[in-house]
Image (cartoon, rainbow, N blue to C red; front, side, top):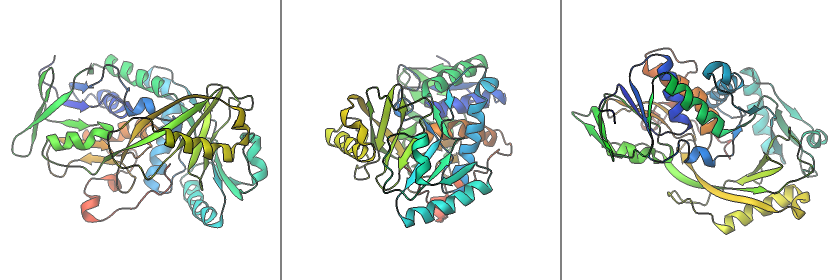
Length: 382
């Protein structure tokens, strides 16, 4: 294996590969990606629901998503490789005045930033999402610029484009330690040897804190299990069935092959690296889905799985250099929206590393915001 590099990216998921591609485009130097698993993107990326939305409550998250949507809509032109981005829309179902007030305020901010989002009446909902029960819904938000992406397409596209630009990607290469001198990164240790480098880019997803600790520092990112269920074929699910979020229940669902993908965030789950499927968690998802979509009563369960979110205290990512270790750069803590922010995150991280003005202002995503107490929580998370 290589013995030196200008930058080592730890993590071969969607965030790490997007960063590698953009750094290579900027001709940063010799870039190496190390991934501990046999296959790229087999961690959190492969377990995600695939949703892409800009309907957030904070300016930084909205702008990150809008930039990602622009990149995804032009992915083949940018990378040379095709990727599915089905702009079927995202719909948030609102069932009380508090939700309506919160989302109305968010819609105003989203529209001010150029997002084509609107509030719609309940009688319009079934036009887009048939069989969804609407008798308790007072309004919904709808943005048809949002949609669904195929994680595998993005992984393969970014990996192929990165390799074509000279990036070396090493799989089954687990980082076992980080070498430092005078609080400065000098390289990494792996199960296959050491790589000398002045810059480590932490794109380790749920394992971000583990990597930071290897360098003698810490980062406020915790792994939290989330579960997903998919159904067998359903005759009312068409190709443009949107992602639908039942705000009150915390349930979300979208078209997956001929059926639906169902998910729910159980906030009682404690941080851990546990990816086992909890039957009670699965039952909760199904019961919430049956309540919102009664037609699921005759549907079969096709599959279920669990994956890990990488969660920060304020549900915003951390993008920027470590304040304690020179040569450590973070792209972590996306709190369930890593896939949707990856194209933009990879771009702005590369711009920041190369000393360029970032396409999206990421000053509010700096690591030291927690120490300074300058945080603004993103509350529209699922």
